[in-house]
Image (cartoon, rainbow, N blue to C red; front, top):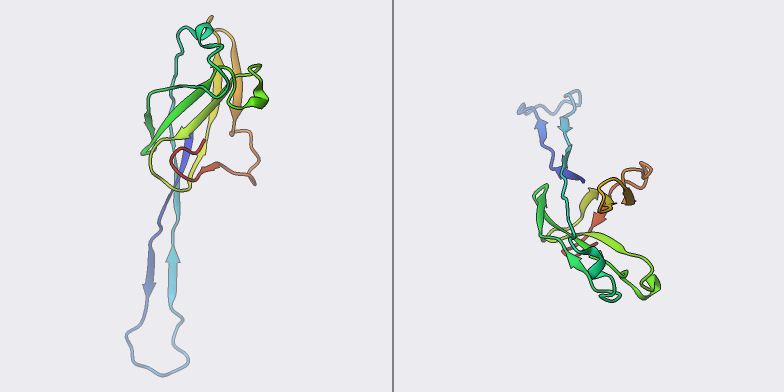
Length: 145
């Protein structure tokens, strides 16, 4: 999971202390810098006894431990019978959620299911393939999924 974190830039202003009223004085010069960096992290959430979790009911979930990436707390929520009634227990649902206080946390993430053999990977969702215009996903508040 890559998290974009914005850092405030610095602004410097050079000015002359000359008390000249001449219109030929040089204009003031300003500069600013914005630095955005990415922090990468990885969390493996192992669900032992997956087959026993089927039939828990739509909307019921198994949550990972809370983990830290980029100075924020996160958790993974796995719904063996789906999150909503439209899933009709035919699909699983998998979400990553912001577990700490924060506003407008921008994140790129990929969720992958690995079967019990360890050989089959099934990409559930990835934001890394998004077009540049759509950018990272923004989680607005604690509990955003």
